[in-house]
Image: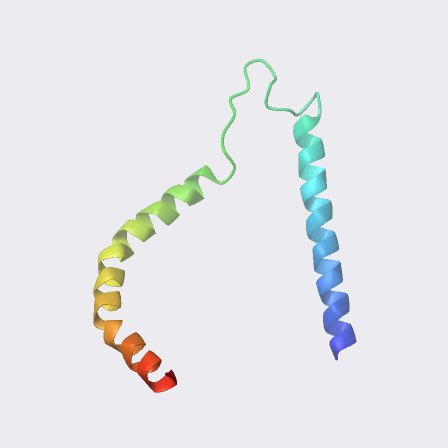
Length: 82
């Protein structure tokens, strides 16, 4: 089964590399580039990044409380290991 996993990983890397190369090629193209007069450049996934920022801001107080409560677990684990 390791051969199938290795082949899968190689194919995923190949596809990802091909897509990145195609995107960079299209960005440098004269007909589709962001430097055409009148074309506004928008960052890729602009709306999605706003959602991630809002979700992070909403979860920050809860994560802080959880980390404060779990501080003794790391001390206990290091005492057991040591």
